[in-house]
Image (spheres, rainbow, N blue to C red):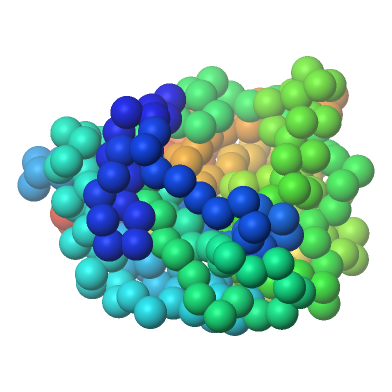
Length: 294
Ligand code: PMP
């Protein structure tokens, strides 16, 4: 999917990925001291448009600030440079990965300076298009008193890599993780919604990553008059739901067929989740006011 022949944006310049170098004596490589984002550009009726680019670059800034990683760039300049990057690479639809990282320092002290790289590649839905088989992982989400769970910090994703790899090894597509108190939190890199008796539920943002897609789903629910309740979810809530779905920038909105050995009873096409999925696709592709389509 990614291609070393494409251009990347590195500290103010556009360079071929294959020709860009990095410092091997750096905190990002050794300790995971970096922060990143994942956003998408879509080929819309209004041309190439990134979806909620400001929210993503603002979140990149707050992720960096939460770990004292210098962030001397403005959201506006990063958005402009990213559009230029897409044009240089002739990409009309792409997944975009900005990464801020600390280089040239091996101490366990806050970074004195940082670099930014923005890469892009053409990428379909991260988890495919089919309904998912998901398992509940033994690996829990990072503890909020030890980690910045509301930020996209590079090193924290080792947890996600372990949980997802375990899930795939067991024949599932993705892993769900509990939070520090044993409530169902989210998947490795997607937020979770469940549907029960025509109402949607999702854990409150204090206990999960504040996904931008999660917020978009909540906004769609408000617009379409679906009942949406933010509350902590028990394992029993998860197993006794009528249906469920995951959402994230990379994955989009994708229905869950089964949790462990328990299949959801509701036919996905008739769920609230499926209506939201259709609306979301329209929203990102047109990026204009969307009609009610249920
Ligand atoms: N949870 C985690 C841990 C993530 O890394 C992501 C992807 N950034 C998400 C959820 C989904 O967030 P978003 O909708 O902003 O892509």
